[in-house]
Image 1 (spheres, rainbow, N blue to C red):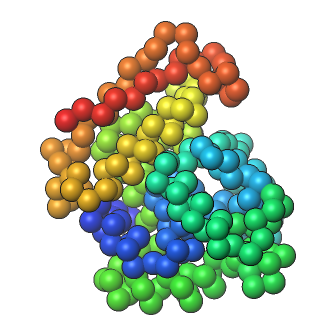
Image 2 (cartoon, rainbow, N blue to C red):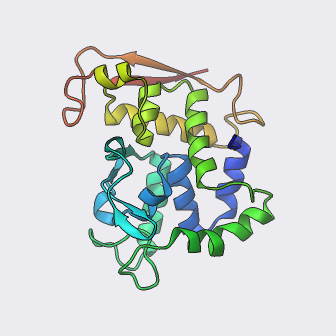
Length: 232
C-alpha cells in the first residue's frame, strides 16, 4: 500500500524545497493535481480561485486529461494562490500561452522526471523523505481531506476521480465549496493547529451546511452551494 504523509511530514516537505518545487508539491498535496496536469499548466489556465485542467503532459507529449472526469476546475486555496503569485513574479514569461513550469528552452514544459531527479530527490533524501513521490502526495491529499470529513463528492471532483454512481448522477459540488475544502486542508497544515500527527482529535470537524437554492451558476446550476464551517 502507498504510504501516506503525516501533517508534520507535509510541512517538512514544503520547508526543504525551493520555490518552484515547493509550488509543484503544493499543487499535488493541497490541490490534489496529477503530475502531468501540473507540468501541463499554462498561465492562461491559472485563475485566482482555480486551475482549469484541460491538458496534461503524458510521456513527454501534450495530451488530453486522463479521463472525462479529469477535465475540471481544481480549486486553489488562498495560501497556494500566494505561492503561485510569488512564482509568477520571478518567472520569465507569464503570458497566457506560456508554460507555468517551462524547460530551459521556455517553449516546452519542464520534464517531470528531470525535475524530480535534479531538484527533488536530494532534498527529500536529506530530510528522510526519499520514499515520497507524486503518488504519495496525491494519496496524502485525499486521505487528509477524508480525515477532515470533506464530502466524498468534493474530494472526487477536486482530484478528477469518480465516486459511487449515485453521487455522480445526482450531485455536483460548487467551486466555492471545493475552495473551502482545500482552504480547510491548508489551515490544518499551518503550524500550531494540530497535534504531532497533524490531526487534533481526528482534526477539526468540517460541517457542511447546505443553503437552500444557492449555486455557482456556471458549472453547478442545479446544485446547492455548501457553506463550510470549521468547528473545534
